[in-house]
Length: 151
Image 1: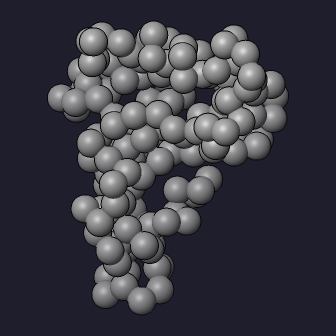
Image 2 (image 1 turned 30 degrees about the horizontal axis):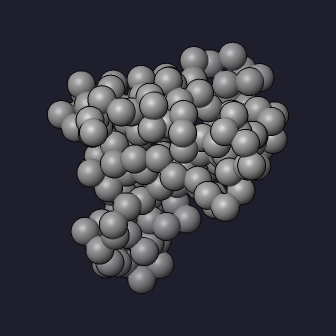
């Protein structure tokens, strides 16, 4: 399940429309994403898209308590999906180190496939961005995604 089911019950009971966003948390220490990209050598964009496709296309969770059905399909619209990434100072060993261009490419692929891109990107905490411009992911993301919301 790799973390996909931990909020399935809440989504089933409250409905996806109850949430402003739902995140794919790639930033967790030793997350499967890190292994797949660094050890297994998978393409980072393809690896993000596997997760995006899983949430947007839907997946079934069985045996949830207190639901009227024996199974529930978790399906998140692009307008609610946020990719959770580590800050730019991440080591790429324990925490995912994702290039902003990788995220933009995943966004573009999502938009081409589903008619709209995912809602955005988030961090565990923006307070840990770092003290210098080189370590600040927000600056790099703004530059990479600037064509979406021109000034």
